[in-house]
Each structure stands twice: as C-alpha cells, then as structure tokens.
Image (spheres, each protein chain N blue to C red):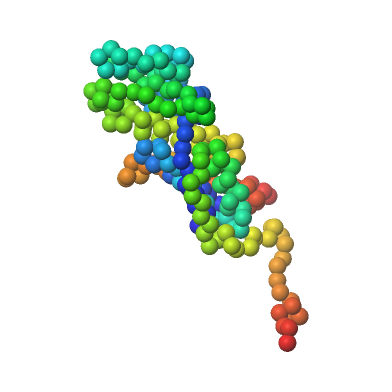
Length: 143
Length: 72
C-alpha cells in the first residue's frame, strides 16, 4: 500500500444523480420519476419546492435543493418513506442515495482517468468497495 | 499490478481511496485526480512505498558498477 486518503462527499452532478437514482430504484433512467423544479410531498400533505424531485409510488417524495456551493442537499420525510418496506429508500433514503451517487461518481471519474473498474463489492458493514485497476505505464497490452 | 481501492461508507458521506502497487509520488498523482472529483479531502497519508524510488522505465538496466560501490 502506498497512499490513503479520506474524502467528505457531496452531490454535485444532477445527471449522475439521476443515473444513481435509477440504479437504486432498479429502473431505467427514462422510467424514473425525476423532475426539475418540482414539489416534494411530505407528512400530512405538507409540501416543499425543490430543484429536483424524485417521485415515489407512495405518498412521500425526495427533494434535492441546490446550495450556494452548487452541491445538493436531500429533503425528505424518512418516516413516511419507511412505510414502504420494499422500497430501496426504506431505512435511510439519504444514506442510500448518497452511497448510490458516490458509486456512480467514482465509476464516472475512473472511466475519465482510463482506470478499469475491476469489481464492485458490498461489504459486511454495508459499505461499498470499488476496485480499480490501473494499467498505465506497465506495458500491459504491448507486444 | 497497480490498483486503487475506493470504499464508500454505508451512508455515502465518506469515501476512502487507497492506492496499491504504485511507487514514489505516482501513487499520489493517481489518486489526486479521483479525490478532487469526489469531494473535499479531509485526510491524506503516505505509506511506505511513497518514499520508494519509482521503478525505472522498461528495458532500462539499473546496476551498480564495482567502481561505484567501492569508495575505499
């Protein structure tokens, strides 16, 4: 091992977010109920406007509000979302979305850098591990 | 084999990046681009290999001549 770094993450790219949400919800991006400048449904009919909204089949949505630094914060009624035990958002919508987004973010950046995505594994503690291989400069593929 | 292990915490709030198989500063260069795109780096530690000399280019012979190794 040679280098180790820790990063505090943020959601920044709406296109990657959409892709991550589609993966998380197990649906195609085109079929995802994801819209800009929408209304988030919450407890007892309360609503909140958000820059992006993920609609769900239940009575509660997930909103994404852009901050001054360009990143997005998540607004939702987790209690309401927890009613649907089969939903991938059950338990921790914020955590599940953050994790799915960062996974897409890593894969996207790895592709830009020419790194090979070797394996994606969910570990026992619920964290996700992505193994990237770097073949640059080691002569692989040369004859 | 040079590889980068990325671990995303269960709540997605934290990502750790660990490089493996790189020598010298190449490990830092390899991870910096990735780190920059992921968020704000809160800690950064070099491991033993960071202080090793990079491997010579392929085909380059490295050796120590008898004259170089004897200063007596």
